[in-house]
Length: 202
Length: 196
Image (cartoon, rainbow over all chains, first blue to last red; front, side, top):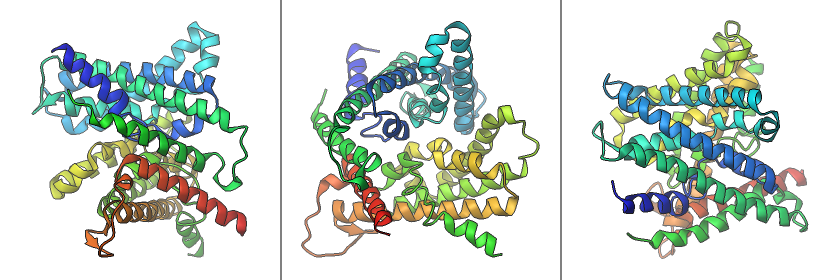
């Protein structure tokens, strides 16, 4: 476990392999909720929290349940169930302890269950930081950190996109490309600029 | 019989999951690098859609309304696991090419979307044809996108060179090319709808 590895994970999860612009995870929410900055930020924070927590939980499940009992083929089912339950649980807790926060996050939380980024980061962690069914050294911290970084990458793309789209509201665009098509074309140009990070080597 | 045909054909054009409903885009964009990957993903998703639609329609009267989503997800995840294991066993090359996008069929919005919007209210045979139609619509959309990308990005279709001396634009093999192609296609289909 060394600092350079953390830097590599950070750069690759946020810039080179940005969840949205390079891996296409969480694209539905990205296009649907990026019309204004405030809801986009709320969604991003909620996603970041859930990717971090689900990295943590799924690591324990993979390490202490699925591997010892030779059940790795149940990975998909167990991960998605745990994530769905966790999101539901968080929603209930937030509703109970902080109604204003519930109004802020409330409608976006259930959407996160079917956000590919959350299951994606759990699957990626179990692919990257386990070799032949054994955790690599520092695997737990790498997984947790990757969860945070994927959330950060999501936030970055979301904020950039919502900023651009807020300005686009004032432009006259052809009716046929309004909303979705234009969103994809902008995302394409953003993705092209993120490609520039590809040359980074450590 | 006519009724079933209607259920079947609506998924292919009128309610095409990719171009009209705009659902399940993550795998569509990620695996559309080459036509063969597109077909593989399409078949995998069609199998999951078909299976989950039938099972969900069968259990629709037993599942309590409040916990229906977790129940649906378990059914879907089971079919995805079957696909995963089958693909690993019989086509390791395709499995490597599709990578994490195979387990991610679980969170493909089309599958859960059809369960929510259709299969939980409809009879078994209707759900079967709905799933089949949606799956084939999805596969056709994937083939269209991946054919455009493979031709422009690598100058080939299914590995065969079409035009000699054609210089491919590498950008179409990159993620940004996928986003551009789907954006322009969506705009094009909107334009067609307006003209009608």
